[in-house]
Image 1: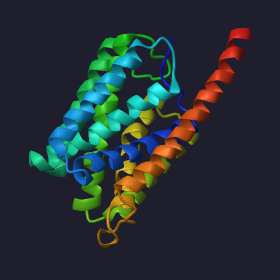
Image 2: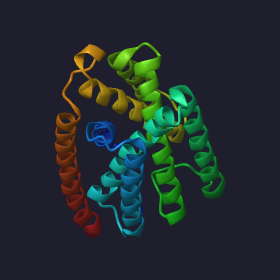
Image 3: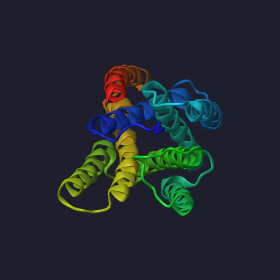
Image 4: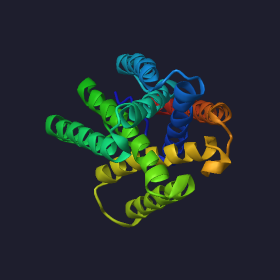
Length: 249
């Protein structure tokens, strides 16, 4: 049974919401609460492992569980990227290059063993393991790339978000008006929504003097968390409506 969320417009809205929350919540733990990047990474990777094991053991699609895993990959990715880029001193550019390489290796291994990178019909544990590993690396990459655009490129938080938003708009046009490979377009969009969320999260939390809106990590996390809960409740409601109809058909 496919336990992965269907790729719809709501999917992308929830993905951006979850990845933005991952940025603000990761910063809340590592910086606002002064836990540090290394300890935060250990805590959040532990939460990711717990949630992904529960997802792998599930016998069907459960929206709350699925989006919990997405959220934990996002929060873990935030602190993992910050640990690599800042504590280890790799910098945003080299950190992004390392993560791009890791993601490409995961996708290549997935394609080699499963003969497909499609996410519309993941029905084996091995394919789902590749799926979640790719998501973890893509969300970690997105943090590094978002920080690079916001800090090192000179674009700032708003400029970085606008650039990524423009690229996502081009992907929407490509999906609508071209016959380009849909799997390729999906993974490009999945990777790009993370830096979009990262730069948007920085825009919300950073001080006005640094180009942000100064909402803070606590306030931003509460707002985004509330939105995600509403979307998950709606997804659960629609899933329950569809299931009886499928049973009757």
